[in-house]
Each structure stands twice: as C-alpha cells, then as structure tokens.
Figure 1 (cartoon, rainbow, N blue to C red):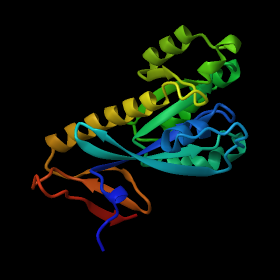
Figure 2 (spheres, one colour):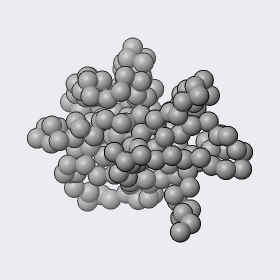
Figure 3 (tube, rainbow, N blue to C red):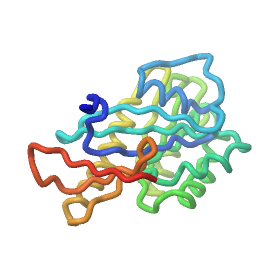
Amino acid sequence: MAPRPDDEYDYLFKVVLIGDSGVGKSNLLSRFTRNEFCLESKSTIGVEFATRTIQVDGKTIKAQIWDTAGQERYRAITSAYYRGAVGALLVYDITKQATYENVERWLKELRDHADSNIVIMLVGNKSDLKHLRGVATDDAQRFSEKEGLSFIETSALEATNVEKAFQSILTEIYRIVSKKALASEDPVLVGPGEGKAIIVGPEQDANTKKKACCST
C-alpha cells in the first residue's frame, strides 16, 4: 500500500517541551501543531505528543513535539522521554519569577538525561501579559548567552513568535544533522519515530527518497 502523504518526510526530529507546570507548554504545542489555544487547558499528566511537517531548504521535516509534564511527581516518568530528543524548548512564564528561577534546574536535568549535542531554546511564554511581567527580557537574554542557548519570547494565546520559535529550532537541528550526513558515509540517527528509529543517509538517487527504519 502506498504511504500516506503525511508519511513522506526526509527527516524526523523529536523535540521536547520542558519547564514548570502552568507555563503554557501544552498551548505552545497545540498552537504550533493545530493552531489551537484552550483557556481551560488542564495540567498534562505524564507525556503527550503531536506532530507537524514543515519545509526547510527543500527538505520535508517531520517534527514530533513531546509535552513533558512539569509537576514534580511526574519528573521521574518523563525523564526517560529526553532520550532520543534532538531539540528542547525550555519554557518559563514571564509573569512568574519562580518559573524562571527553576530554568537552571530544568537545564541541568536536560543535560543530564539528553544527548550532549541537543539544541536548546529558552522560551519566555505569555508575552501578551507584559503588564504583569516578572522576568526582564534582558536577564533571560544574558542567561541564554551564558549557557549557549537561543532565546525568544512567545504568546501561545496571541500566536506571537510560536511559529518562529519552532521553525528556528527545527532549522538549526536540520542544519546540524545534514552537515553530519554530508560529512559521513554512514547513516545518521536523527531520533525516534512512532515505535521506530529513523535512519537518514545521503541520498543516492535524486528521484528516490531513501528512508531506512529499524525497530526499537
């Protein structure tokens, strides 16, 4: 049976959303993947994910975005989901200083559990609530530069910079991975898919997409 159109992609990247509960991770996920926002959204329990396909430099990139629960009691469960992630959005609420103060702890956990080459973006969410701001943009920018992270402020409610945030991190991941693929004759493991690892090697036939899969 011929593959469905949404099964056609050149690269599959797993990206995780991390940060305290209530910072808006689930709404960032739903805004990017479904262009939806829910004021009544409840705290995520465990882990959920959604996918979206984008184009980068003529290649089809399938992003698999995982929403990891922020509650302390679920951290032991979600830590396993860092494995295989090639990107992470570390999210805090610009109106709540405590969520920003916890960024360092989340960053340490991410670096403890994820691949050392993971691409990380710091995201200050809820920029629509500037009148309630508790975290200065300059402070977050300086922290990001010190830690080697990219940085952006977003509003899932108003859809401000959400597309830009995901497009930027996926483009950066793609450029890193594609350079590795060009520099090596071996296939490059770019992350887990739905029950399989996606191996992407150099294209040998311009008219034929080569995708090899192996069970995990």
